[in-house]
Length: 228
Image (tube, rainbow, N blue to C red; front, side, top):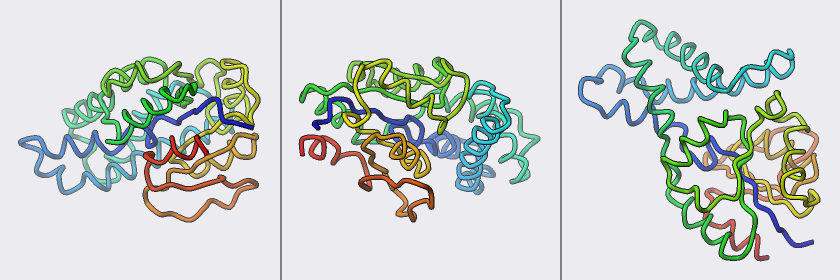
């Protein structure tokens, strides 16, 4: 069955989640932070994800923006930088302006030129996602931006993946789901989507009930894959 609809995770897939910390580290006067920024970026992202999973299991949903702040606060304290309020404010500001990976605009444009539906499906809150899409200048290449806020639980809950069929009226086997998160790609495969894991770091596949159909090191090969 041909792929009619291409769905992308947002953070870490289309948008570089390390960009906020990297940009702050390059600013004048942040020499101390520059020594810590790779660790901050890694720990921030890890805790952000862990808090989504834990809140989903506990039934304690809260918006992704609060989860993002909580993850940053943990990371800053882990690196001994919890007292730098200006740094915290700056990092959070920059998170609304994340860079897209370089191949993203042309990749999405190619999919649209081929007549595919394109959309984001993300744990992110609608306002956060709108800010990232505007900052990256890719709004004209997307048919929709779908957020978990409409169902009140984070991925990988199945009701989140249900949003794709509800929006586009397509069966799962017509959907290519693309994520940089191995657990997300595995869960989407188990749901019935065709899946690609964008494995930029060359990590092992997660030991979960299902596995992604394919792996790529970046997104540039997606249009050719969809064409078959």
